[in-house]
Image (cartoon, rainbow over all chains, first blue to last red; front, side, top):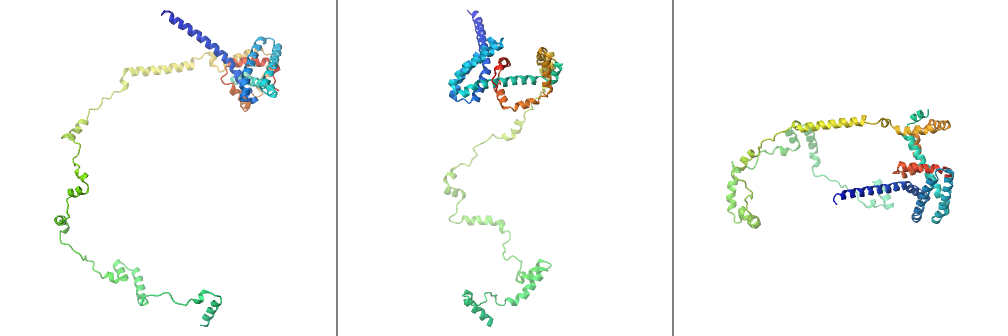
Length: 139
Length: 256
């Protein structure tokens, strides 16, 4: 019995570590979505009650967005069509939480956030690379 | 006289109180004041020009200069040396005389009842032997550099520092030596995929003045800063995936 106990503990720890890692990965994937939700909430000026109702719906929308992207990434046209359909569906849900004017702006702020993030990523890349050496690569 | 009357009449007509006041001299001097005044003034002047104090005093006060300087009172010889011995028997003869002990008993019986002995005592000859006791032999001084293990420890520390420094400066791989080597390699691969038009566009973009100052311009954009703040703590992997998703739906982005 004494021999089996350390082996059992080792297996248990390994299993626990893998679960933790998986959970961490999932949480990590949701981090940017949380930040985007925060950005949209601030820009829309949602009240506390509206924000509490908006938050789970938006996170559900993001999960579906990621899934749609994953399933249709090879066909860009279809992907764009699916995203538009998804947005139309969720716009109806957002209208039940806030007034129509602000519900229409949810996706505008989402897209602004996306554009800003792309800008920042590109800027970071440029900063990491000295311009002189970039030119030498191009030649 | 006529003028005086006219003035009085005029004051009466003006109903002034001055008309009722009788003219009278209010200042007086002692009798014979002016008889000796000339001599007094002359003596003051002479005193100012006197050569010594005796001469000056003779002018100012002749009566003071005539007073004898001898002490009018005298005591017998040795009077003050014997006064204590002579005085105490005389005091003791008085009926209300008390000794110091009797007086303190009268004033404060509590104080008179206290013992006058010192409560602390030391053995005989204690202070004579005190110096000898405190003169302890000085502690032996041992130099730390004489210890063998200390030398070895110091040598080990110096060697460790030298080896670590060597690793830091010379232990880097070739890729790491060159700053941004990995990023440049990735960029080179991306450039190889571009056609000539894209390369030219990129060249124009870089030559337009991407010197690093543009970062400062971007920093002034509050919206960008706001997003930057929000992106803190987000991993590169997540950002990359997010960028791919966003770029794939670029044509349907609602940015207007």
